[in-house]
Image (cartoon, rainbow, N blue to C red; front, top):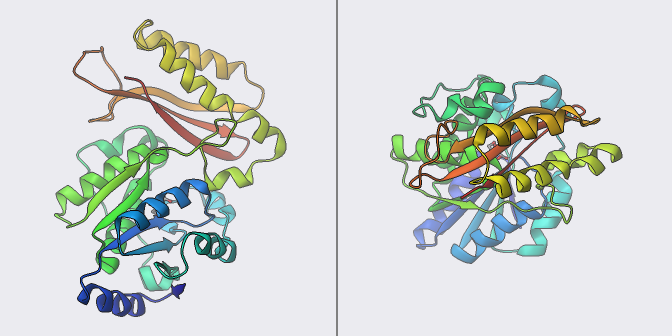
Length: 283
Ligand code: PAF
């Protein structure tokens, strides 16, 4: 498996492949790979001749210094996991901060038509500018035919589709379903940071989403939201940051249900210092 740390080197290697008309899929990650990432990589392998997996903990998308410092970095085991899928069709790009940002570690400002102002955008200032900056740079460097993102970060997926549309980037964005532990907890690199008590408690998040889904259509959105807020207020270990039901097109909170719209429930929860997010389709 080829591993590149420099954009000049990976660009040269990819140019060579593209000259042979080979298609390139990109799976952008921040490493600490889990089964959810591997499912994205497997889908990309099925649909492309070559798959680039980028592994880069992007500093400009972190609004919290400790979160950035503590974010798991496990390059060796990430590579070992990728090798279980393919030795020769996967190329890893694990750049240094310098290779991506030179000496200017700042995010570009983006307008994602308001998608960036909801949910995560409200609670993580500048987060989506950081995500837009790194993803746009990765698209510029790799020039993939297709790029793969998980629906756990549903708002991120919507924003990347908007980025591609507004900046006319010639790449097809493919969203993939959330991968869950047997307990229902959405897979996330941050799960490895959960202490045992929090690990045991965290499946409550998905349980709550399932309940909301069951209630959707029979109870009002306000009543569902009230129920979720109460359930977390009574919880010893998990602290609710937000729970919202939003239109999947605009990501704006539901006002009243119409048959024409599609909704998802979105949640962010603190398990101690670890922030977890999840979401579920409601209709
Ligand atoms: O979802 C992630 O892991 C990151 O936000 C991404 C898309 C790799 C950008 O750093």
